Length: 586
View 1 (cartoon, rainbow, N blue to C red):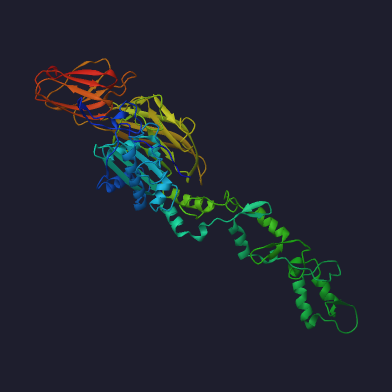
View 2: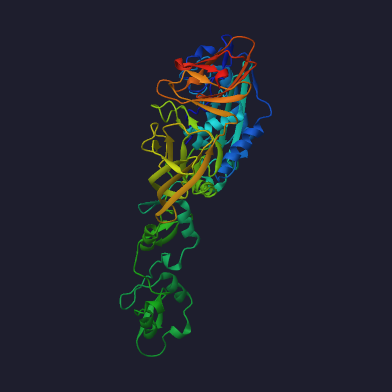
């Protein structure tokens, strides 16, 4: 049950700038689509990033709180496992970057601590095996790392998992500033189960209840409260004058201590019963053997002579009663254990599948019916999505930030999405429908990683900076405990603001008038030819001017031209894009 999927950092990560040919700020991503692989040399030393655990823990919990979900608790063993893997990655990722599964360690490499997340957690003394893992490589800080993972849809669903409720965190960096961040997630309830090994979690072999496999407790309930009419009775050696059978238990009492009022005396007819023989009145025996079963049920035998032995003491019960009991088993009474157990613990303790499902149900019940992201009324939402590994949009270089909707498996059985709509609020207050949107679900997801209750919508163009959007989804829901219902889910969110003047640059523009001695931001509209120009930049100018830059994403850069006269500044970018910035023409 362990989820082992290649997790990646936010693809908004980019090389910051190349001020000169010899001065490069290096940044590497899990997906490395540009040719700087030789850039990463062997790491000589790695250190854990100090005083950041609380920041990571608080930020992930802020995300879950915004989504209306149960917060995580902090796990020391999971943090040990995450830290060991972060150090391993920082030491080794540069050696064999291409084709490397970042969740799998090679025992021949330095700082090996376990092949997969479950093994590393076990080594760190974490008792539960089903550890989920998110990894971010190359992010500049924790906030950048987590924000990026939340923009990557597969990793987002891991942070917003309905079952996990505890988290550990690790980070490592080297002397060259290369950062790795690892987040491991688990479950407190299963930690306790694996540690304390409660009796009720033990698997029990299904019992064959006359062809129906039932849980042991179904039979145990019967054994603890067997009705009197279920208990098999032997028949008395002598039958009634009318052929009816009598219960041996009743007649044995009569024979051993016959009441005086039933004994025959004097002249007339009588019956002889018991051994040794005693004479009884004909009226008494004829009355006892009459067809009035309600009055004589204590004495008359049903005539059934078949029985089954059940319970630990081999109690005999009538075959007809037991068959009816077996046929009455509900789905909850029937055994759901496949092979009788699940191996969920980092030990030899095996957990009943039924018990595990019951634990899941309790976890699901702690979280809402559904979760949307970005959350309702969110601010400062990243407007762009580039890619992740695995890539949900392999044919598109740049798209808008994905919206997602996922339903709680403990509260929803099935969902059908009938409509989705995304709109942007214009300056005049009107809303414009954004039609170019791709939906991913369990059928259209190229990686087939989505469940039937997970949905995402990718705007095929970037969202705009500092803009308001609203989304609406119409769904038909089959609840676990409720009938089908229609629901319209609507929410608003706002994209990140730019704290300077924003200049939008179209693909045809080569010369650009810009301000001097103040910050401004350039946004280069992506196109097929030049989709990610800020992957690498180089600024050139003459004189004693000072040019300061800060890359925001692979289409956006913040600049300040100081002490500059009227000399143009050349901005060379990736994919052959070049701009001439003219401060005196502004």
